[in-house]
Amino acid sequence: MSKPVAAIFLLAASLVHGADLQPLDEAGYQRLLASAKGRVLVVNFWATWCAPCRKEMPELVALASKYRARGLQFVTVAIDEESDAPKAAEFVTKTKVPQPAYIKRFQNDEKFISMVDPKWSGGLPFTVVYDRAGKKVRVFPGEVDIRELEQVILKAL
Image 1: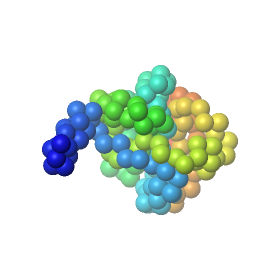
Image 2 (image 1 turned 90 degrees about the horizontal axis):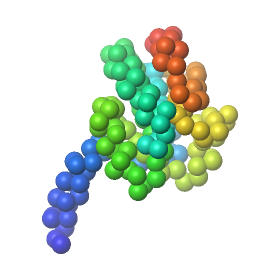
Image 3 (image 1 turned 90 degrees about the vertical axis):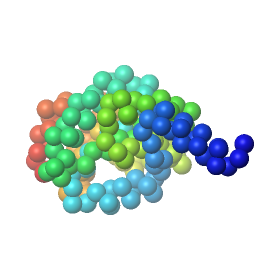
């Protein structure tokens, strides 16, 4: 198969599977945090195999949309394996998760988890809120209480 034809097939496959999930490693997470300064950042770690993750996502997306104009940035990181990336991308598209959306490519899962929050066990879902200065203001291990998250966001905005 020629390179142009192969490229067309790859492009078509990405369109069929939905959103483009960008790989995210440890350095990429640090760059993401640095680039979000000046905005309130909510990072949600989730996976397609996690029922509470899938359940809470539409509410998180609605909350992100509600406060985007006031300076809220919402980012998702799928903790799926590379083989499940098409399924994760399809879910992101179906639930209208704002872009960019990421998928894990951590070099060391335990080190990444500790970097995000030393108290995080690695359980999902896991949501982190950073203020406009880039300081972590709250973590939500497990399924988030949307009203509580909204109060934390409003205080940070």
